[in-house]
Image 1 (cartoon, rainbow, N blue to C red):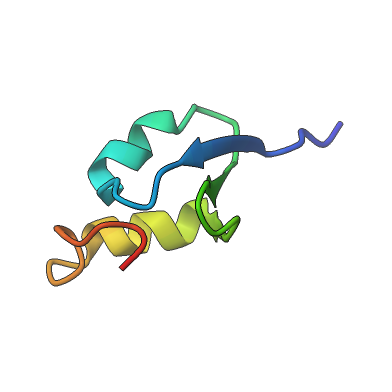
Image 2: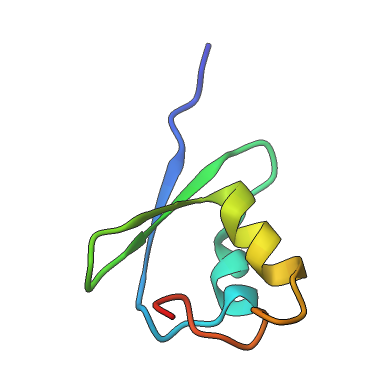
Length: 61
């Protein structure tokens, strides 16, 4: 049985470390930016979190 990804609606001014609090074990997550309706995958959010240059940027940047 394939689980549907969890949808997390976030604001564009949220930092990646705050957005990653929505992650759940054994459940993939897709992030939706409320202002632009842009989809960001869990992997993209983790990569942004791990990048020291982008860590402090807001999601909308």
